[in-house]
Image 1 (cartoon, rainbow, N blue to C red):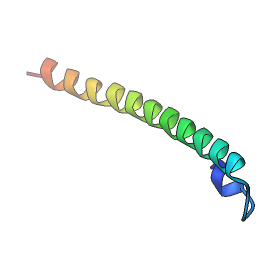
Image 2: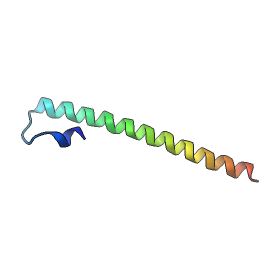
Image 3: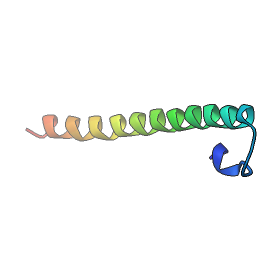
Image 4: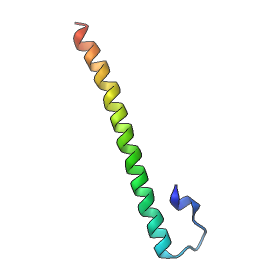
Length: 52
């Protein structure tokens, strides 16, 4: 993560920029995980309905 790569005592501007980049990166990962979960669960739900 961007904040983990910062040196101790980094100035506030660099820390803020890294923190914002980290938030955007984490949000992007979360969106991808939610999309994958939706794809998996919709396939399972569809199998249950058609199997009746």
